[in-house]
Amino acid sequence: MQNILFIILGLFLLIVGGNWLLKSAVALSLKLDIPKIVIGMTVVSFATSAPELIVSIKAALDGFPDLALGNVVGSNIANLGLVLAITILLSSIEVRKSFYTTDWPVMIVASLLFVGFIYFDGRLERYEGIIMLAFLFAFLIYILRFQKIAVVDELPEDDKPLPLYKTVLFLGLGGVALWGGSEFLIDGAVGLASKFGVSDRIIGVTVVSVGTSIPELAASIIAIIKKEKAISLGNLIGSNIFNLLAVLGITSIITPINVVDEGLLTNDIFWMLGISFLILPLVLLPKSLRLGWRDGLILIAVYITFVYLTLV
Image 1 (cartoon, one colour):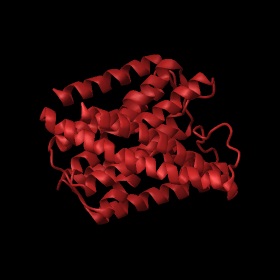
Image 2 (tube, rainbow, N blue to C red; image 1 turned 180 degrees about the vertical axis):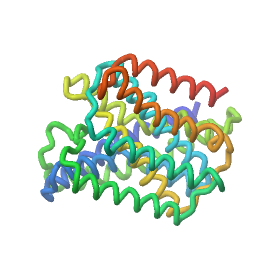
Image 3 (cartoon, helix red, strand yellow; image 1 turned 30 degrees about the vertical axis):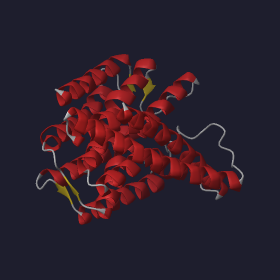
Image 4 (cartoon, rainbow, N blue to C red; image 1 turned 135 degrees about the horizontal axis):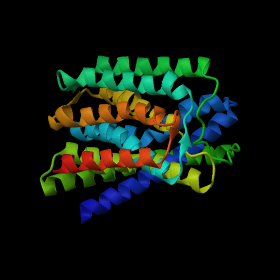
């Protein structure tokens, strides 16, 4: 019972902390007069990936590498199989042309890069983390220089600059809440894993990953309720790119990550690649550049199958 309470409290703090961090980051960017296009592709993406980043670094430093890896791999599967599925079940979305010219190819390259690094030796080295971060910076520079339409759907409507004291307060509170949330979540997850005799990896790719994907899910549902354009596919793909290149890149630079449970290499990474590849035909068929409820049913069926097979 205590473990479940820790997990719930941890998730609550991560969601609240992520939201505060996002508010302060956007306010700070507006105060510094940074264009919205830059805010959307850098600050917003990074802030919504903050829960994954904090949880992964904390897990790796505490000696639970499978929790760090499972969190990112599971989060990428959940972003497409759960968050995107629920979004398009509630309301169909139009997909931008940049999806197949930039976003999807970069996500696939990032996924293959990660799989290539980890599959053969079961370890993410520091230099591999540096390569992943370098690739992320190259992608961001390309986006900011050549892609005129940026994804800024997650920016709050009332994105007026906050007073400086509020910005600093939100930044501080967000950081503390994220750190505290990661402490509780990891303690609860590890406790739950040992109580039920399952591996850290299984808890990572199911409970922890869904928890750290909640900010994206909440943003999607709020956008639909407000009758705004739903969180776009580009945002979720951007989140997946950040999870792989920034979260695992930074984590492995701080401390190299070893795979403990082989299931991550024989099962989870292939589900992640599979659902990433599946998005392309869903977007292009039967009606080009549109995702509807039928696609949502396919994605949710894939996600439920993944969770079922992982737990069984």
